[in-house]
Length: 591
Image 1: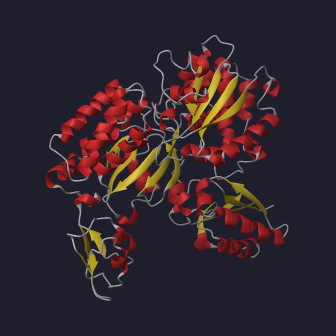
Image 2 (image 1 turned 90 degrees about the vertical axis):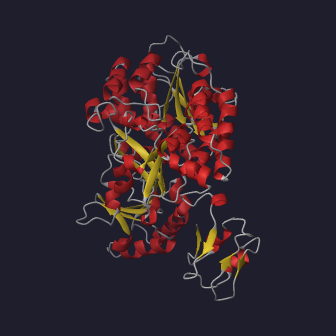
């Protein structure tokens, strides 16, 4: 029977997918037997949501930007009339021609982690099983000893996808070596980086892949209980995890003597309060234990004494989601992708000034240029590409002239940035790099747990300096002060938050020092972004004299007759930017 699927991830729902789903439900109820209505997660094309897929005889036709009215057309013309709506198709299989630029988005990808996202109903364990789900677990329990699982993961070369890139097989082995009747498997689904939504989409679109990976880890290290630490701001991910865990217990994949083996293992969900510092594993453990999320001194390391002082393995969502595929297909098959030292694939969240924002999974070693201009479609409004900010607040800015840098665990750190969990914010010529550094430092300064003096106070002093520079009050000594503070904070901070907090400042100073100099010496913002350092003007050729800007100005700095070009009194203007936001003709500009 034909199926019609609606993308019901957070991105789809925020774009209006629920009303589309409801409309399709009404229409299909009026035409029994025409098609079965189902839901799915995010396939990655967030920029074209809501997405509706029609699936029949192995053929997939995906429509984008679907409204309730568009859904009615799909039913009338496609389902009832047998006509494909070419003008709305974003992707289809077995097609002689591509559906526009979206083929460039999908074709370069190798989907291991995202293999089921956007293709199965995430709330149906049967659909996961139909795609080979839990076959890897069966193999791990019935055909492999724990030591063999560890060797398979080691041989695959899988490295932690949460940012550190530590070899997963070695990490598991360290926990497996510990003698303890109680061990824990923890999944870090906190994902606090601005612009990152990889883990959320996997949990919403394929929660069983993460659960299966955790159970296989439990078998390998002989753990007894697992925790998924998910931020409470991900309600849909938590809801689908709860559904998946209940179904897994009912099927015998969780609980006592799993699938007739000697493995007793279950998983609980712990909702986090959104503290960025809880991305650091010892702070995460403290939060699960009911304490304040603050890091601990290491050693001992979590493999020895982690959650409740018991041996613990902690990986992120993407890492666990790789595991079932590796166990099922083998380490050699996994190593066909990526590079020698960074095997496999990586999921990236493309955000910012890129044309096609969304999720993409590519082999390690793919260049920044291929991600931004190939999959991402380039820069919005044909502006000049300036940089990518990678690794979130702990990462750094990589300039356009390094766009051919391969994205892997060896190459990215050489630029001064880090891979992080996979957030990639694309910046164009209108982005002020001093402001970008200030924005991310403001985030980490607020998220500091306060335990370390250099992190608590040092980041505040750096932030105050950056704020002064963006206000046009910078001093010549500010740059060396920022550099000194950055080194001291990195050296003296206990955990990864403080040790990486200066990265955005250091990388922007490294590649865009001239912008700092312009702010300090010339009192100018080259990107015309920092409002204290720019003036607002009205182009008389574009101004129609509609008076909207004048009526919106809070200080009455704009004057002019109706249907005549207006002007801004610079002595009165407070540079609030309201005039730019309300102008419908692009007549107001910064200079």
